[in-house]
Image (cartoon, rainbow, N blue to C red; front, side, top):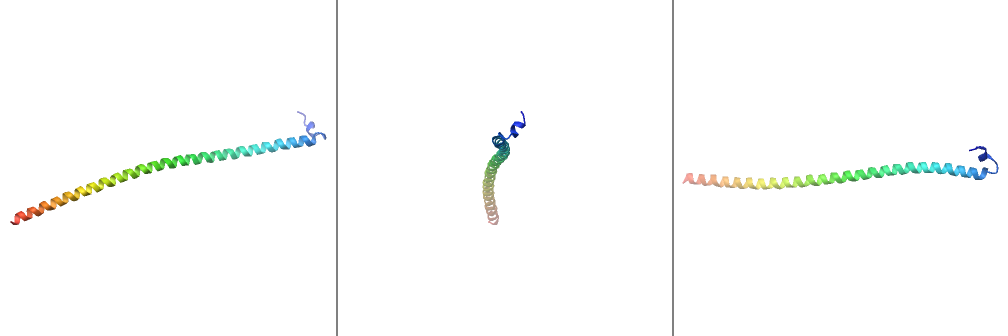
Length: 101
């Protein structure tokens, strides 16, 4: 390719427009590619964050369920212990009454 054909007077207008257009498009394409890559990276990062948040919410729901089950078991055991304490107190009261008579 001869550089002089781009610098001749008769081709100067069209060639310069062509070259400046091509150079401009190359720069724009490069910037667009960079922006597209950064946009894709951000979108990918957001998708990963959404997945991580969904996983953490699922784990949180499991933990809440297990806490609720443990609370129910604790209440049941407290009720059973209260019942045994009541029965024990009745028995000791009956023994005390029987010993007095």
